[in-house]
Length: 304
Ligand code: MG
Image 1 (cartoon, protein in one colour):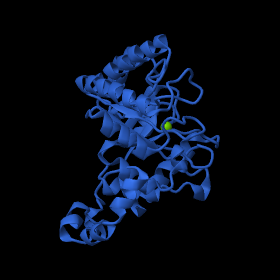
Image 2 (cartoon, rainbow, N blue to C red):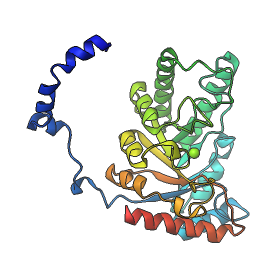
Image 3 (cartoon, protein in one colour):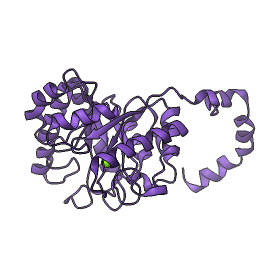
Image 4 (tube, protein in one colour):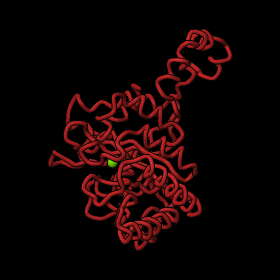
């Protein structure tokens, strides 16, 4: 809308205000009530492959089971060669594959045709393996700041991206999994840095196979964890968690490590997927620190 049209519409804004309080409009905009909260929403905790202590995958899974961690997030690199290994390792355990973390070559916004082709081939191969493992989806960053040459940040590129995502999403569905867009912070990925924008891309891609996620570390750039997750709503397929000062294990940055506001939103949308550790470690005692972190986020989940 240009400025002249805006001024014209402003003339009737009084009528719009009156309508907003009418039963017709308010029924379209449900208020948040106590009933909207879903305190029964379960917190499903997931670890990346190297989060738990242990020399072998089996030892790490034993540790996770002891703690009640029910998701495992492997990296995507070489995933196709490890499908049987993961299937055997998880057989009989109360742990499932959560999301798959990247691991492809090239990037979707590459201007270079060979690099884009490399992305298409390797990302699809990971999607197929992810589907075999029953994964919730394969995480993808459309372009890191350092990845060049990159398509320009224009409307035309955005439209092109949603078309590409639609195709990928449909392929992901055929594999039994999804594409998960991960927004980062502006220091790492200018192209996509807010959860609501990732959700808007999902909507515009118009495929059930295109989803998004939020990472509490990158979300330090959001003005509200709560608003970010509420905006993502049905498109939210995965969550990463780390300490909020230096991206260590939750709790290692003391009082900064508060996730209650975001958890409150996850409960309200009855988020069914995983909150997965993607973090470093400051302490030398991995077992004690990771255990304390799980206790911390369970306490904060209760508070939310
Ligand atoms: Mg992340």
